[in-house]
Each structure stands twice: as C-alpha cells, then as structure tokens.
Image (cartoon, one colour):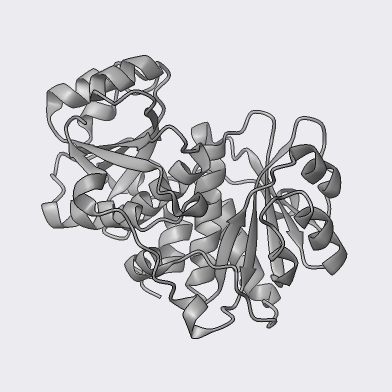
Length: 163
Length: 163
C-alpha cells in the first residue's frame, strides 16, 4: 500500500475476524515498532506478544474498555522501561498499527486503567509499565474496515506562527 | 513510497537543506496528523505551523537541544488540549513525520524542556501544553538521509506471552 494512503485511511477498529495473523506478518509489525525513532535513540520499549486466550483475558481485566480484546487474534503490549515516555510509545505503536494496516489488518489501542494489574499479568520487571496494549485483527466486515469517524476541520486544527 | 519502506527507513535527522517545503506538501503533512486515531476520538491536539525565523528562534530557546531548530524550513508544534495525553501526540506526530518522509523530507522531534517558555512563545490558551515540536526539512546530504542508527536486536525486544 502507498504510504500516504495507509496513513490517511487507517481507522481504529475493535471488530476483528477470527482469521489468524501469520508469523511473517507479525514479524513485519514488530519490525515496524522496532525501527521507530525515540528520544536520544533510547528505544525505551519492549513488546509482549499475546496470542493465547488465557493471557489475553487476564490482561483485558486490567482495562475499563477492554472487553473486546480477547477477540483479537493478536495482542501486543507496549512496555516502557523506567525512563521511557508515552510520546515515544505512541510513535512505536503508530508504526506497528500502520504496518498492520498496510497488510489489511485493523487495530485499536487499549488503555490499561489498572496499571498494577497489567504489570502483574505480564510479569514486568520493577519500574517497567504498560504504555498501551494494541489489539490487531483482520476487519470483521466491510463496515469495520472503513469506519467514517469525523475529524476536526483543518481550519480549526491549524494555527499559523502563533495560536 | 511504499508504506512498509516508509515506516522502516524513516530516521530522525537534524541536518536540513535550505530548500523550502511547498504549501501542497505541508497540507499533506498536516492532513496525516489530522487523520491520526486518538483515545475515544477526542483528537486532543492542535498544530502550530512556524516558518518565520523570529518565531522559530523564540521557540528554540525553550528547549535544551533545540539549537538546530531554526535551520529547519518548517516547524510544527504539536499542542495538547487540557485532557490530551502524550501517547496520542506521538501517534499524530509519527503520522506527520512518516507522511513527510514519503515525500523525501526528514524530521526530528524537539522537546521543550521549559514548558512555560514554549506556551508563552506560542500564545497558548490556559491548560494547553506543547507535547513536542517537530522540525522538518529536506536532508542536507546523503549521509543525513540514511543515518545508520542501531536498533535493539529483535530477540531482546520481544517477549512471548509474558516478560
């Protein structure tokens, strides 16, 4: 897929088909996250790949809006090391979600409202935290592939030189 | 440019040619940021476009590693509204930097260590803050186009099911 088309057409969706994601495609998604830029190239992240039902369910219990998460064939928890920041986690996550979308796979970030619960579920070392959990899957339907979610008009969004 | 190539080959760089960025290309970059997904589709951001030397210099004084910033022909400050989070700012920023890279334009995020200074320089409303400032420009040289910055080996980065 063309880069501009991929970036502009990506919509977050929580409706996934059961079809599994191939190992090759998974490696491509992880590689996209791995190559993301970060503050001083600290790469302050690690990725925990979850595909087993029990692990996905245990983690889903740590978020308030995560009920759909176990239905995703692939879940990747984006973990930040002690000095890492959420901005960099957002960069790596967007890279992974765009790389997936270029292969026709939709996704949605899932927040972990109970951070201790998520750290325990994943067995994280001291000081590491879950920045976000990403759910991936092929779209359940044409509707979930092309969701028409409104965006702020450009004129309201952009300021020239100063606010 | 192909999406996967764009995502994998993008490197942050601070060495910019003087060549200006066209209005059409700028609109494409802003559109990429505008279309980014965000928590509950709150789109908690605004973009301040700076191209005049005085504004870029005033903002550069608010960051500890921002000396190069005025040399960038295009600067976009990513502003978060009061309820916005840095993860979403990272998603929108990565979209803009990838859309630029697909047109051969390199970029680098610049942190504003003195947040009050940056808010004042941009004239932000109460409660708004600068998540990050993005500097954009065509690469100054082939070297700055293809920087060989090392990444963590995949085997250290990825965990299966649990840490």
